[in-house]
Length: 262
Image 1: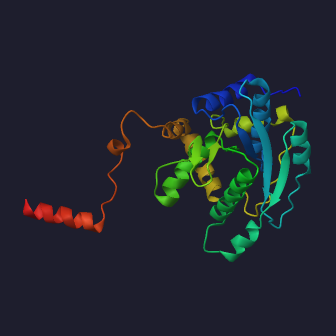
Image 2: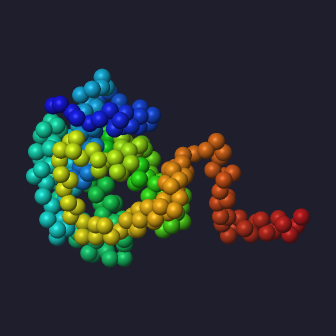
Image 3: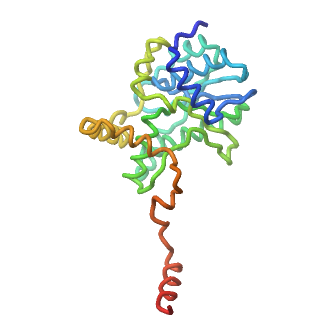
């Protein structure tokens, strides 16, 4: 197959793969293929990398059908993966029923939790040692703000993560690409993204944060760059830049008694 992805895109993906040592010779990589623009580019780029690198590795792809009421047509994904010579399957998981039966939990959290679990199980069953997700740079920045605003924590996902329980390594090769670049890459792989079956697609906390960043960037063009810079550890330790962790009641009691004695 003749790949058409411009060098500027391929270079950013190679930078992530090399910098974070994402792919090694002999890896068996499972691609999480939702059918959206991000995962389509991921599958295309990895197939391109498989052809061009001396690091021989294998690919297969999996789509999780969460069984929502909205139609989810994966026929175009079957053809797409066949053209890339990537084995492909659709696995149905009744996430919709779980969400209905557990209304106290946030639906996005429940969906992501069960989707990841299903993908990890499939990877183990098919002898895949790595799972590739299509998270990009905007996703990382938005996750940073989501954690800060909605859970009071400073952090985001890592480009590469080893999961002890499943013994799988998660990699995110698109981490240096901006979302708009992925939109502009659609003509190069030539596949129209599949509409998400999610009933609240476009009306999530992530969308709220995405709009917040866009609004702030209109007033200060450097906002996004500053947020992206915050993803990196600086030369200073985290303890120098953040308050210490809150003390327990026992620790506070001991500190109080020590203060009163001295």
